[in-house]
Amino acid sequence: MRLNRGMIWFCLFIICALAGCGSSTENGTTNSNTGANSTPTAKPDRVQIQVFEVDQKTASKTVTVSPADQVQQFYQTVNSMPAYPKDAVCTMEMGPRYTLIFSQGGKDVETVTAERYGCKKMMIGSDMRQGTQQFWQELDQMIAKGAI
Image (cartoon, rainbow, N blue to C red; front, side, top):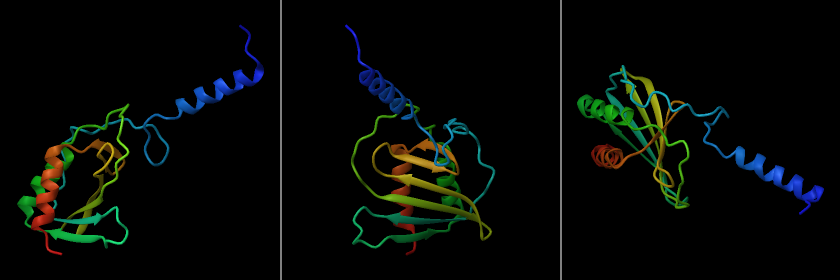
């Protein structure tokens, strides 16, 4: 069986397109999944949680939690999340997105984004993590405790 030139170019295009489907960070570099078990050195005393709902008619809300012991426990949970799987297969569902801003003494020490849809991806700085059930439960508890 002989392939024509068009079919060869088409196959090469598909191969190149699929090769670019790997996991990457926002700046285009390959995710190294480092730091998933690192111990954070900051001791935040406050976390601001911004909730962005899927429905754009619903206003986003922001809550702040400041008991230092609760914030530090939640910060430990966030930093203990496992590395994002290299070849994750995600659902096409939609859900809310969160931005968590941890601060210590009035200065921001860490910003985390968390997606409660698809693969439940989290970004801690430039480090991609996988949000677990424990994280989502603690996040819900922090939002319930927070002052709007």
